[in-house]
Image 1: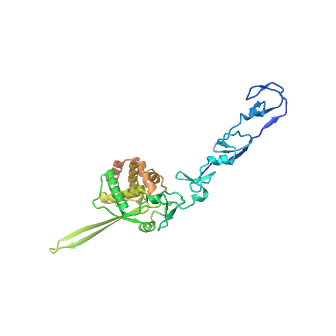
Image 2: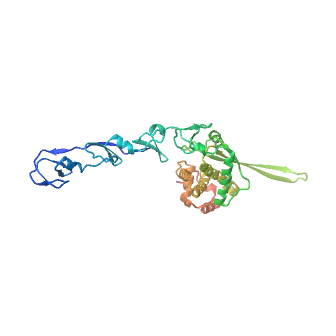
Length: 340
């Protein structure tokens, strides 16, 4: 929450000296010699109210001279509440002038509407929108662009696979299945392993199963066949940018399993940190500023700390260095938690 600096009501005191000037003095405004009564302010004398008023500050909105009481806010002065409110930011929902405001992602809201439900796509409180079956909310504006159907989702899903290939030069032969799910289903799939940490909310999940079948033919020869099933689950009602970022993250899990089998057993923070690092490479490439900021500033001990470990170790945009790290690292030598 961002609070405006204290608004102060100031009383300007004017003192007229009843004393007659004993020595010659000149008016601080017109420079005429003063005889008789005069007004003093700031160690200066003024021959008349008119000359004194010319030295007064003006209202920063309407320009009227501040002769008596005025209001100060954020180093500006105003003659009235009306002038003050004319320059205050307004709540984006009720348009109420805000002396005290809540700033959410650069948008201003009053106390009441800052606590309103937030859109799952833009993460902002809203006036018009609806509730989804999994108890998330979508505002009227975002509802026009978020991903609901599989046709739109598959276009972005295939694009994410191609983006990962352009970044890493690696693409598994078998593309995982895609399933759009709600928050309730995703939480069950992940068993809440991360969602309860620091308010972190997952947008996707990679699931992989490998089964081995052994058989013997009529000649007594034994053969072994391995079957791999891969599924990527992604929340429906994500914005296209968030969907694409999430899909690249989940495809990175698949890449690790396919091309770096020796990394099986990586601590969770390391694997998720790698996936977040690759997702950031996409965000920088496509200028996904909101998704980039969300990853970089995440307070989560696994996703946030994991990403920041690799960013600090490798630099902000260095896939080749990450590749060499993945080739050389022994997962057993990594700590259970991301080093600070």
